[in-house]
Image (cartoon, rainbow, N blue to C red):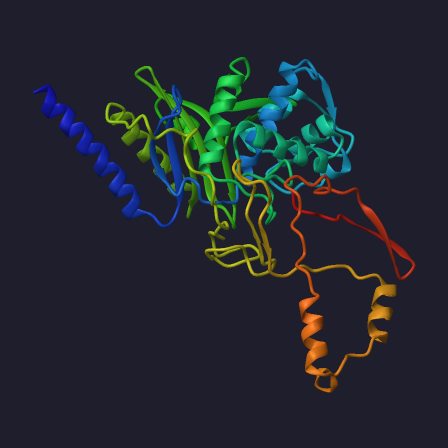
Length: 395
C-alpha cells in the first residue's frame, strides 16, 4: 500500500509539471531545495532574461550586507535626492529632501517594490546609483551569479541588465542563508508609513501555504517575474519564474511548480545541484510582451540591437557581438572626415590593393575585467551648450 501511495505521488507530481508546461507560453523557471541546493525542476533555467524588479533582491542583499558589517543601521535616516524623487512607479512618492529610515526603505521595496526607496538606498551606500550598479555586479559574480549584470538598483528597463532564473535562485538562496536576522522582512504583508498602512502586492506571500515571501517583477521585456520561498513539512523550497504572460499566470506557475516539487522530494537526483549547473551560454534575453518600446521577440529589441554575453567563471574574456552602436561624433572629427576624398580602387594596381589588405590587423579583444565599464561622465560641448554622456565599455 505504501508503494502504491508513493507511485501515485510521483505520478501526480509529473502530471502537475506536464500541465504547467503545456498550459502556458514560453517561460523560464527553476525550483531548488533550499536545504542543499538540489534542483527539483527547471525550464530554461540558464537562459538570459530581463530581471525587472527582481533586481531589487540584490539591492536588498547589498543593504543587508552593509547592516551586518555595521556600515549602516536600521534606524539611520536617509534623504531622498532629486533622482530618487523622479523615479517612475512603483514608488512611495518621495519628494526631494524627504526622509525615511533604512528599515522603511527595506519594507517599501519588499511590499511595494518602491523604485524611489531603491535609489535612496543605492545612493546612501555607494554615493551614486551607477556606482551601486557596479558593486551589485561585482557582488553577483562573487556569489556565483555568472550570467548576471546590473545597470541600476531598480530593474527599470535597460538592455544590458540581464540575469537567469538559476542566478536569481542563487541570490535568493544566499540571502536566506547569509542573513537569517533580516530574512523575516520578506514575509511582510504590509508596513506603516507616515501613519498609513501600505499593503503588499505579492500574492504568493499572501496566499501560498508556508510562503516566506521574496519578490515580484514586471517590465514589457521581462514579462511577469516572481521569486518565491516556502516551507512545508520541514522542507524549504525556493522558486523562480520568469516570463509569465500575465500577473495571474506567474502566480499559477509558481504555485503549481511548488506543489509538484513538495510532492516529489523523495525522487530527486542529487547530481542535479544549482552549484554544478552549466552556465557557459545564456544567449540573449527574449522580449516577452508586445508592449513598451518593443514587440514580443526572441532576442533583444531592434530599437537597440545589442547582443551581450555576460561573463562566466570559465571564460577569461568577455565575448561581445555589437551589431550597431550610436556614437557621438565631435564636430572636429566630422570636419576632418568630410575633407577626406574617397579613393577610387579601380585606378589602383591589384598588387597595391592586395598589400593594403594584408596589412590590416584584427582588433585585439578587451581584457576580462575592464575598469572602464562605468566611466565618469564626460562633458561634450555642442552648439555652445554642455551635455553629459556616459561612456560604457564592456567588462
